[in-house]
Each structure stands twice: as C-alpha cells, then as structure tokens.
Image 1 (cartoon, rainbow, N blue to C red):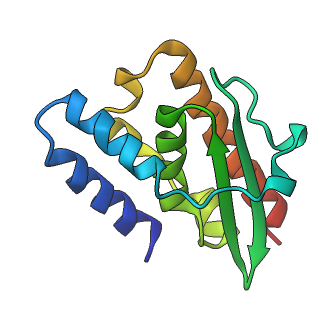
Image 2 (cartoon, rainbow, N blue to C red; image 1 turned 180 degrees about the vertical axis):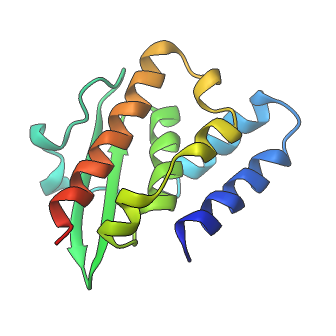
Length: 137
C-alpha cells in the first residue's frame, strides 16, 4: 500500500471518534500492535533524543524496503510511534523521503500533545527520515 493511501486510512479511522479521549484510547491500542524492536537493538544509539520517555527506533533494509521497529516505556509514545511506523515502514527509502506528514495535522495529533511529546514526535519523524536517507541509493 502506498504512503498516501495509508495516511488516508488513518485520517478516516480518527474521524470515527467523537472526542480526544477516544482517540487517545485508539492510539494506545495501536501501540499494542507495533512491531517491537529486538532486544539487541534496544541500545543507546537507537534512543530518540528529545522524547519525554524512552523510545527506541531501529531500521533495516529488506528487499529494497525500509522496515522499522520500535518500543517505548510510555503507552502514548508507543502509540504515536505505531502511527508513524504504519505509514513509513515497509516502504522504499525514496518514498519515505518524499512522503509528507500532513496527516499528523489532519488528525489533530500535534495540537493534542504536550510540548515535550510534540518535540518527541518531531524527533521520531526526523529519525525515520534519517534512516531512509541512509538507505537511499
């Protein structure tokens, strides 16, 4: 599935909820479905700087696609990572680099995060793009 199609699915899913309490519950649910990072990759160099809580992000290239895995101590942070990984994991490096993040604003996520969580979101996006840049050949 293309990045834009996945983003549109997420926007549609979030539109089904009445309020942000329900949306937060859904974000937590998404966090439970994340591809958990292998313990051997839960290392200092995979920690996202700027996150309020610890979040590890790892990437590897398989069959021309970048595959991300992550984990966090915090359930909301893990859910936010799940939203990003759902869009960008299993895509080509070029598509990841070309992909926009407008869907984050469209679901209203950034405006409903604390400043430190919003900083963490930006840091996650940067790291996802950096990994894609490294794999782009």
